[in-house]
Length: 309
Length: 249
Ligand SMILES: Nc1ncnc2c1ncn2[C@@H]1O[C@H](COP(=O)(O)OP(=O)(O)O)[C@@H](O)[C@H]1O
Ligand SMILES: [Mg+2]
Picture 1 (cartoon, rainbow over the protein chains, first blue to last red):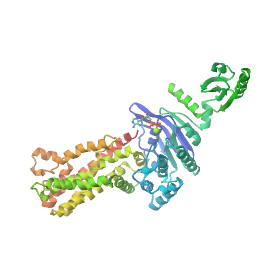
Picture 2: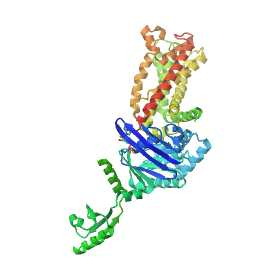
Picture 3: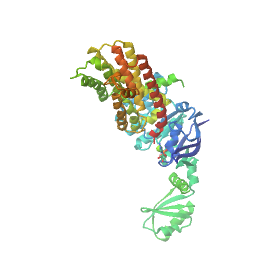
Picture 4: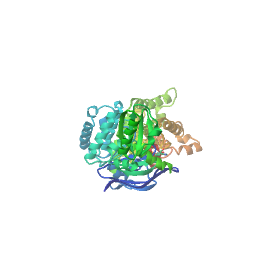
């Protein structure tokens, strides 16, 4: 069974399609990412899955529970951290967790045990009796994760879990996501950050303007989106870009400060030619780096392609 | 999922509301001072006795305290970004709103006990205590439901907007509810207008409780308040279900 199954899900606001007939499934045990720029429909999709927003068309199920007909069951099988959410700042970390546990009908002793475990794991146990008001953004996000995990859910849904966090909190949260996943939790997360997606996700759906334009492993998307490699080179003196574009196999040349970026078909032929070029013109090569095509390149290509249609 | 289980979750929400929205210094002080202030404002320098004023004053105390905070809860949770997490818990919308109603109810009852005690100490004798207590519970629940209804529209995240709009409903209601002039002394059109306010029936019942005199009868007062309570609650739930998604964007 798929942990999340989505068929033709659609949401309109007025005449505007925020989410437009999207279909995908998240396999049990994987980390699945929803990658797209702001306003592409990621949160709207999540809000349909969590039952806040009613879809206009299509269906979806979480752990086999229909999100509309069996919304309460579906919600019971997820842990959720909304985008830019907050815990109750007037309450202590502990009380926030007890309240959440209550909402899931978890008996007191069980609630307390889980809350202690979670707070320890997220480095908040010492601060459990402090009001959340005094917590940093990273601490709040960690507490929200604790709150999402209090019902021991099989599926974790995270809307932009690392956006706006400091490096350390972001890294900790990513580590925890991986750790939870290793222990069997299915994770569905959204992000507009390509690095996060490729670091965390086994599969990524790229969404733009409410439409899914590709679903694949980040590495496969890299390869499919672009066969081009990139060479970054800097010479001992400045050179004419146009001359470089005459080198065999070079498709495109861009200037970045004192570096030149060459997009090439054949990396071996290109490097040999660059070396020859430098020797003929009596220049030194100061640096030469080869870059695999980044997910960003692919993303820009894919989204521009659909944007132009 | 059983309704009983949902009801237990309502209680958890009510408890949360009490901690966050009611157990605050300024709210408590307002709740306690305001009714006492009303008592003083209406008794000092007038030759009306506490007994004459008791029905109207109790009505105002219950009405204002039980509608004081309720309308602000949802806008406040929207603003402080706690709402999305709350409404995605396995809690039905009705159970969530009922939780808010219960919190308003508890606050209204507890605070209203203060002016009630003061009135009793000042010589008011409640002849029909059971009827009065029942009426007080019913009225407070009815007004608490109204307070949730008042936050339906607009689905804003600015608590002040909702409080301002709710004041536009709350203050006129006091004037048409037989608080200052008993219903039987109102002209025909006044009585017609007053019949649409649930507060009218509580004031009438309170008058009956201490003097045996009322315009409607006690059973009618109780029945009408029940109807108002149910209507407010059901309409609030239906409309919130409709407008809640607009709080997220
Ligand atoms: N309640 C709403 N009413 C009207 N438009 C909305 C609402 N919620 C979202 N939208 C629009 O839908 C689009 C998708 O939004 P969203 O799902 O939040 O994007 P993302 O999470 O990818 O940034 C945006 O253009 C947004 O303005
Ligand atoms: Mg979003």
